[in-house]
Length: 547
Image 1: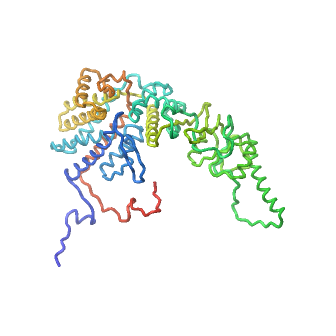
Image 2: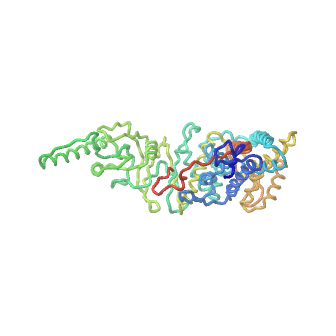
Image 3: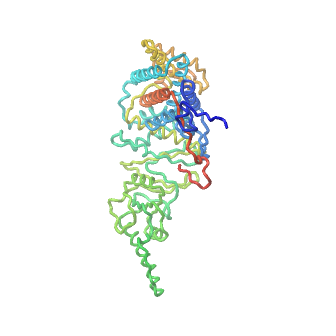
């Protein structure tokens, strides 16, 4: 029997099966490499000419999109450092709703620069100090690039809104922004409250219907519900609405009871009393002046019969969230069940409810044209589901941009003009510093070149030529010169009308710099052995997936 050697050092301290990585080569550079791989994926999707990615997730659902937030969400990323970048992208998506790609790609570029500096011999601490100084200086420069007079705007002025929204929508659907932006702007302005800061993104709904084309897209002041009405009444105008969450049906009693019936007459009377009771309930609704009953659950046969008799339209909405939105649209109060008396204050009002056939699908359109309308629907039409999903993402981006500009309407030049100016000014700033961090500041500035470079590469242009001519223009004092991707030349963005929101750039810069500093601060990775048991992938058949 051979002598068993006891593990020593950190192996002896930790449980069997753990992994321990430390030092520059094993931990820091491996982390940087994982993050670089992630940003390589998203980078080619940056900008209007960004390529689409085809992602199939663990549930076999197919995504064809260039939206970085969707891509990183659906990729099941295991590496802990790359996850930090994903979280930064998600934070940007939550905060602004646009610019997730900028965060991930820029963070990847910063880490690439950090790797070069580490190989030159700089310590990660120096790089972190330099990057922090660089980020603070970049925010200062960014505030100086804000277009004069853009901080005050009327959020109900359609042209001003489209001007600010155009770049965000074009980055998802290039060439279609002139059709989509007016639709989104209309929808947002219709539901904008008196105090724009309280704008709620959830009030702009999207209904996707297959068939037709983009020119068939419209906005509806109200809701579009997929599905038909329950009864035979298909159209009604200027009607009061009662909403019943628990369904329109005869309810079973709380306690069990036995009824002893001796003769056929008693049986007949028993059935009649049930009929009479249902009729009484429906009559109470009709007497209150309501012409529409909206049910949150099943509608009984007998109740439907009496609704038809009293010429009441019946609509069934299965989702409780949709039901809440319907109540918001109409101003109704949802009742738990059909009671004997209906309070007139609980009734809502609609201008019209009609069943329309759009592209072979029957939909119920609930319109409320009067003031105080709080829900608007953008009706999207396209030939395939994946195009519809991508259009919906573009609309979401537009609506989120509107929410952001309600809080802060300042704009900076788009089309990479801002980034080149930041790169130029940060390089100048790095010469004024004396410590080792000046190299890190210079690299931080250089990393901004990634954006014009990627935009040019994705559009098939010569990146080096574009960047050098941009630098030449900016050195001459033309700070608004950016890339015109259609002509492949450098032009003044105020003539092209390409503007980005200041808040999008500001938050993207902060989140990317924070994520990079977090990754660089790690010098050891200690992973325990994964817990036993089957992984989520190897679930036996018949097991429900939680999401």
